[in-house]
Length: 443
Image (tube, rainbow, N blue to C red; front, side):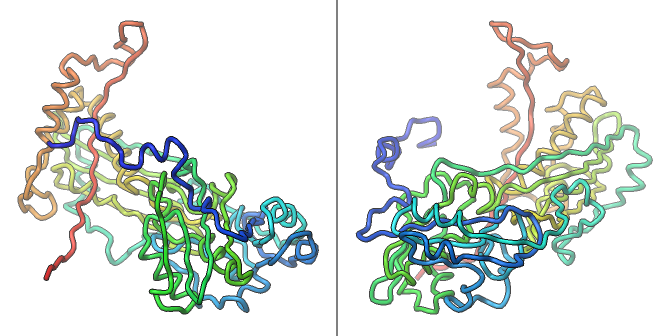
């Protein structure tokens, strides 16, 4: 324990709080041009016509890029990237609109103000279709994301649930949550002697380098990605987002450095979010608190152009020693941009529902919530029966309860107050995150 519980000096702390640390779109370069994105105001449909002529003639405008000329400027891969963990939405591929706030044009001008003013002159006419954004109205259309990898049922949940003494069935809904840090997503790019240099707010410089090299058909060594200070990201900067290839293209076409940032409005539609999540948990137990049946169904939203998955429903079969377990993870297409990883993606949302259900059934059983978890503690992997290489969760429960004085907790709602008369609530929950291992070698 060399570091836990001790005050540590942040290497870049002073630079960040004094403003010395620059945002990715703040690097000063000579002869800089500025980009501004114009976005759609419908959620689903097609662009019937896009008139950019007034914008092109506006003072200071250097270039306007849209679906009208993208394929000529930069031919795109045949398909929209399906893996949202690697590549987010690709802008201007077609006239189709998948979500409100989708970019429909990029204006590049001498100043930011000129680019923004010209963008307002772009006129779009749409064929609008009815949109769907609420997964709770489309649960019947939900489908498994990985049918071949869906967890097999352990035991017989249905019959075990029906004959159990104590039962709980509950639904939980967690709305969309946005990662929206102070620094908006943005990048600065320039080309010199066939080499692309880009300053970007990315959590994955190598992935971005490879993607841009492939897109622009240049050697990887001809792409230099600099991410000095990622700042707040929380998973929002893992994938390649559309502003990055666009700013690189704009710099190539204008033969000048270009900077492009999302507006605060675009931060809600430009890079994903923690998905809309609906869950149903069914628990059954004997009167002594031993779980006899557990079912956990998870449904999240995805977009109509990618198949997003963060399947951690399997955790329900691993965390507690229960003989009959059934889990199901599904998604449903909505007219929203694709979700993205956000701070323990999947695991935090799905463990939240399971642990809420455990709390609720503990009250039905009149058993302390912590004691219920200890009654159902898994000493071995319930799925395989194999021993854990290490597991200190029981010790965590013991130490945490001692530190908090759990034995003095009153279970009745609104029964505990602090010295100033403020209500105090104490609860307990277990969280899980996988320890992913890969083959390693050294020479």
